[in-house]
Image (cartoon, rainbow, N blue to C red; front, side, top):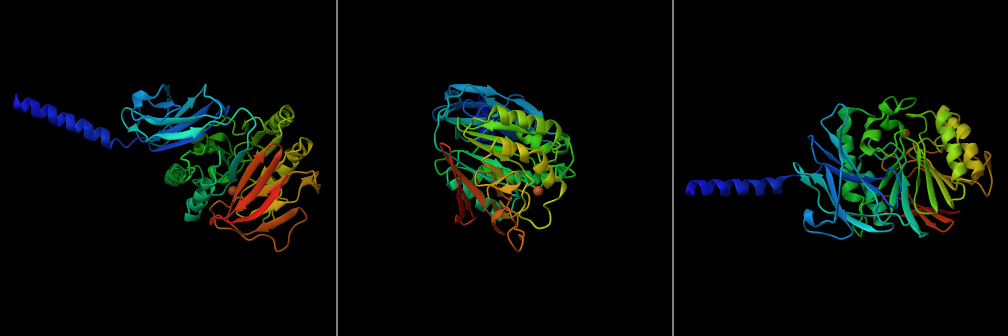
Length: 396
Ligand SMILES: [Fe+2]
């Protein structure tokens, strides 16, 4: 009898110890596959296959999983060529402008700590977001994440060249460091996670340019925002972002340009229209203005940006700071589009041209992120360095 009791006790203790030791998911992060006011896609990863990925969630904080009023099951997806499972759990039917608390995980690996996010509002409100690209996993990458999050942005537009894994399975550790950094630092002072909207860059893609979606396995399998790699996201009633692929896994012209023409026409009455992509139409780096993907952007997208009066193009790729003059029809025009870049969220800054080009208002060899404040149809842009110093501002 005593032996039986002690066996039960040991088994019980072991179960408690195992539950306590269950590490939970390897990463937890947020993105969107559709409506930003009523859905949120919680993504988490595990290093082993699981049968029952699930997110427990609700509008209030809870101690126990069983206390959350809602749960949504995910679909386990194995990452090609790696012992890695990515679980996408799309929460739907959410209330706009509402805070939600959640825990993500499965019965074998355990669950994350409680996290929270906020859906976008469905009515006009002031919105703040951050944007930048060319990050990698340097101390400065994470300093800029901290500075960006300290400003309480509602989401982040990430313009390509995130972890520099070049689509190689042997470089998954780059993504692990990048996602660990995002999880640790991209949390607002109020404790909100910051959802990501990402564009593909050459360093997500095997071969860099001229490839297909299969060549950018992390971009498509870690995030799954849209099967094509170009799409638009509406962020409340007053903002739309056209997320484009500057020739990495889709040609800039052809189907993508045709889609963009239709989409910009369909959405032309939304007050603030932005584009996010990797390779600049108006680069600040010397000697590249007529390179194929720079001129390809000006040829296939530039006339659409002009016709439908894009407010700002968020450009990346060159590891410099840049703000152009307002441009329309390849000329300076006070009512034109401003192009902000050029991707220096961590990577060592490169030299800019010795003198400003005709289209440039300001350039610098300086790490930064852009903070963007939208209020009605007014947009205020500020460039912030890794010390939190604002060193450029613009409004349109
Ligand atoms: Fe790049």
